[in-house]
Image 1 (cartoon, helix red, strand yellow):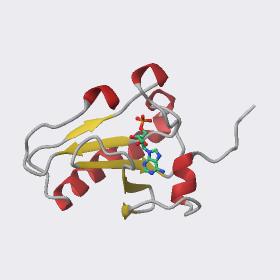
Image 2 (cartoon, rainbow, N blue to C red; image 1 turned 90 degrees about the vertical axis):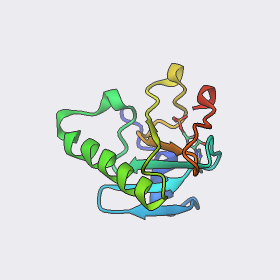
Image 3 (tube, protein in one colour; image 1 turned 120 degrees about the vertical axis):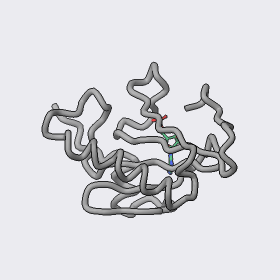
Image 4 (cartoon, protein in one colour; image 1 turned 180 degrees about the vertical axis):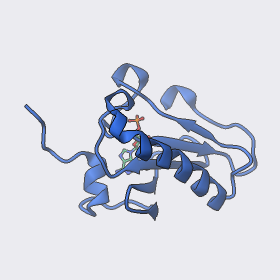
Amino acid sequence: MTDSTPTLFTRIINRDIPAQILYEDDQCIVINDIAPQAPVHMLVIPRKPIPRLVDATAEDKAVLGHLMWVAGEVARTAGVDEAFRLVVNNGADAGQTVFHLHLHVLASKDGTQQFTEAQL
Ligand code: AMP
């Protein structure tokens, strides 16, 4: 049986829940994380609610690539293109709490590394 309950991020995409939306296109949306672990902490989220990275299929290869490309673009827009990290938590034991695939884009404005890795 498939769970048709919209994910938290689908509800944000549908404007049912407010969020700071930084970018969106036909395939994804970028928001500020509500509990930032670094001075810049953005989430790149596909419109398609793929639960975890391992649930992506061959059909999803293009959107996965697109998410990476958008991450670079928003990092540039945020002025952190010289130093940022991408994190994907896959599975609860890896710290995933929202089961709708997303890329964390993490950076400090001054290029130093100030991440709370245990909380990502
Ligand atoms: P993960 O633990 O990898 O699944 O990441 C989920 C992220 O979503 C966490 O960093 C949360 O702080 C973030 N988050 C949860 N709810 C919201 C929300 N309403 N708006 C923005 N970010 C959120």
